[in-house]
Image (cartoon, rainbow, N blue to C red; front, side):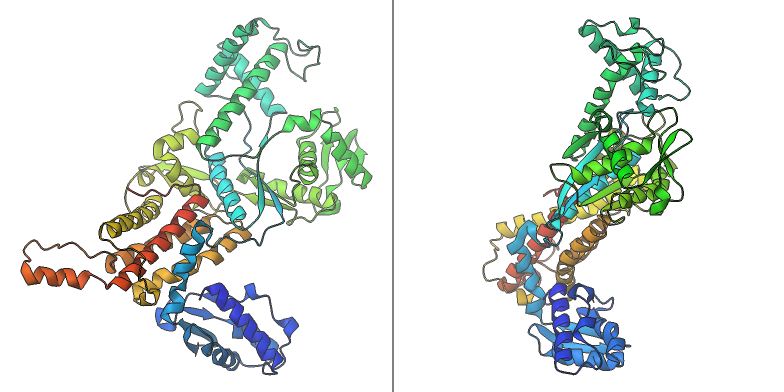
Length: 596
């Protein structure tokens, strides 16, 4: 019997007690939904397999003492199939012990469902637009963006496991001052000049500048001979931006797609595949910025002041109003944010029911204006728009922070990290910590093959379970004759309980936008499995005492060999663990090796 089945049973008992007039002043409308009845694993196994505080939740509404109300639940639970005993403890906890067959039923449930075990459809019918990374195309993806790549893609996989339609989206900032600074830096590098004071540094700037020159030459364009005087028009007669030049525009036009290609390559190599690559510039070229402003103006949220156009965001909870068109006629950054949200919610293909933004720690001040904009469009802040703020990443080696990138200067890039410790360790280490907390990446630890390395520890549990399968096959042990009720030792019970908690954990990880909970669960399951492996056998152990002979040797072998029905049941338990670990690692974008 699973925790979910126990929650449903407790919920039904509460309604039965009400209908039979045994629940005091409690009425059916005061009983919370089934999911609110938490069934927990007691810290002390002497207290049973599972525990519930349902009576304590409802006692006040029933006008009864918690222990007295708990006794009513206990009497009903004792008569339920699959429950061995029930005890009321402390102020009103209900401790439940399952019979061995009921506890072990999870094994067959896992094996029948395979990689779908624990997956559900409670988010079905919703389209979630999950935007993450979205780094400017002015350089390689740095370590902060790498964290969002790991967390964001893992979150998308977890949400899909809960039935949601997820659109993975990368917002490509190819408009504005950041791109101007990038182009200026390339022009300076091409001429062998010092980097502009507000420009970008690193060997990659020299590389991109050279590639632009080579590409332009191949097209018959001598890019270095183009005018460097600001202003004017490009080759097609289009006016150039403020402070721009024909040469800079040529570098911009050719270099931005190069960085775009490099970012896409890095993401693909990191096992992150975006459904949409959205270009900021399209919001301007397609007139969506003007349309979004017009929509807000029609809603009464736009006004003019001091020659500028303002969004009256204070009407919707922001701390001050925001300029969206400056007095010089140029758009403020926030204008594109307004148009982009409107686009997500109303696009023809996969319009977002929920738009989730994953932003860096330096964007905390954006939340107020973004939520105000959401409300101005008639949507619900925190529901239709959700903003997640990630914290900083420190890369450590030998106890010291490192800056190891030769290409990008004084930063660590996604390629630097994966070159050092691989994709598996990179993704797992970045996804296993709550994005709300800073994280230290220890290169020495994560490149080691020791149990201190969390990704190795979990992957080794999977590899070990595969080895058990190989040894069982060699010994002729199969599922035939398996009796899962024989999984009745303490070690068996701990593994069974861990497996039973996976569905609730997966649902919780989705609802809380918390993929790190998957990693923590996997580490707990791996620890439980490793302990089980050390005390229980599927295949008889080989003789370990070279001095043992004759009857003594046979006695050792016999002592270590479980009876066939128990061996087959343990093989099933082993494979159930293998299934769940493989599923969990896949949700984190990490491989599940069969050998290590």
